[in-house]
Image (cartoon, rainbow, N blue to C red; front, side):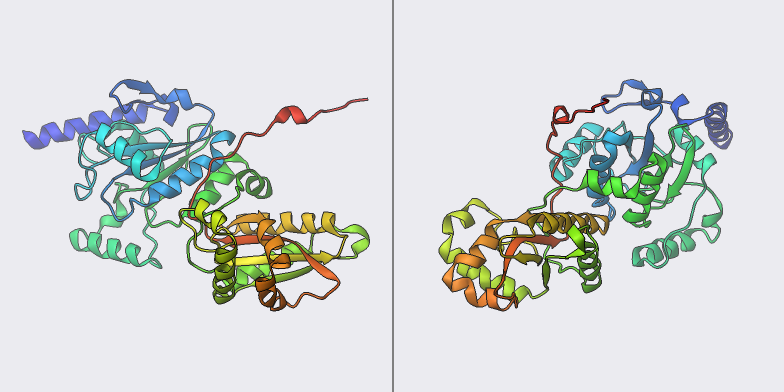
Length: 381
């Protein structure tokens, strides 16, 4: 009898989902338990995710917030559905989960009431999603993907053949028409998901890099790979410049020792500046690498500015952060104790530092500052 009842519930859930044509036809409970129509998101690109707060994938909340911040203004939404079905890793009420996520990851995208994504009590939305896109397989080049595959295989050798949600942080990408475009398992790299979002939005990659770039002032300690620095520098020297004179020199500093040693000089000379940053690591906004742009004395600043923008946008497209710095450039050129470090940059006497670009992997995700569109006038004469 119990088996029959369970089967009837599953069939009822399937019938509801099967009757719907797209995601916008469904209703779900919001974070305070009130019924909400997903038609409120009609015309937007959605990333629907089942989440958990005590999972090895929980740090993906940071990646989801970064995606939301970058593309929300372009018509993108992340819809978060906490689910406790996988290892009981989403305990607590939705209120407790929301407070925890806000405190730890500063999320601003919508969170909905806890649901089940598999079985007789699964949310009909998920019945629809799974019917649109089945299990895509774990990334077996990823160690965690291998572990999940082996764990599932032990429980069910045929696990990969059904469309059920396998674990926390499975993601469904939904187009503006409400149809499912792609399903990403939790081991899918963030850059693959982001590329899918860009395509769904119809976003030009160059425009996306321009719109999402922010000045970064906190970086991870991880140095930037040499190959990426080469790409950034070569994008720089391909900037437009008057008469192809290329009035610049570029010095890419990969030595963390140079950065640390010159920072000691800076700390002694500028204690008040150091005190302003409670997370101070070095004088280059804590970046592990810097790019020094030099121009002939008294000229070439405009061309150098175009070069700098090329490099910062190239860095953005490679998942890096940057900040254009004037203060450290002036310090290196004027402080007597810093002169030995300036000499190590091998800058000719008839050149000077125009600016320095801090570059590294971001350890913050600042919001965009408002831009005054009234500064723009469109003239038709």
